[in-house]
Amino acid sequence: MLYRYTLHIPLTYNDGSRIDPERVAEIIIEIEDSFGGYTRSQSFWDGYWKDEDGKEYRDTIMLLYVDGPQKINSVLEDLGGRYAAHLGQVKIYITCQPIALL
Image (cartoon, rainbow, N blue to C red):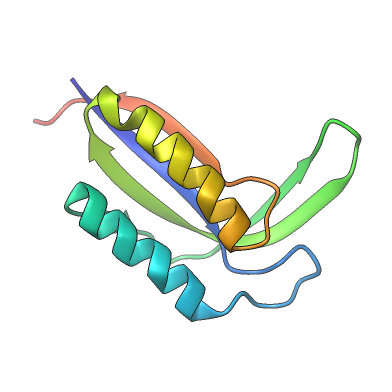
C-alpha cells in the first residue's frame, strides 16, 4: 500500500517576514534526492495554529507531496524536525493518507 505524505513548508516566519527562498529550495532538493520525487502545489496557503500554551502562529505555506511506503514515515518525521529548525519554526506539519493507484 502507498501513502501520500503532505508537508506544509512555511514560506514566512511567524513575524510575517519572508523565509529566504534558498532555504526552502534546499529542502525541496533533499526531498527529491531522498525519495526520488515529489509534487508541489503552485498555490500558497495561509496556515494558523495554536500551541499547547495558547500561543498563536500564522504563516504562509506551500504544500509538498511525497508518495511512498509506510516505512518512510519515520524518515519524514525526522526530516520534519530538522526542517523546522532550519526554517526557524516550532514544527513542520506533516500528514499521511493511504492512497491507491488506478
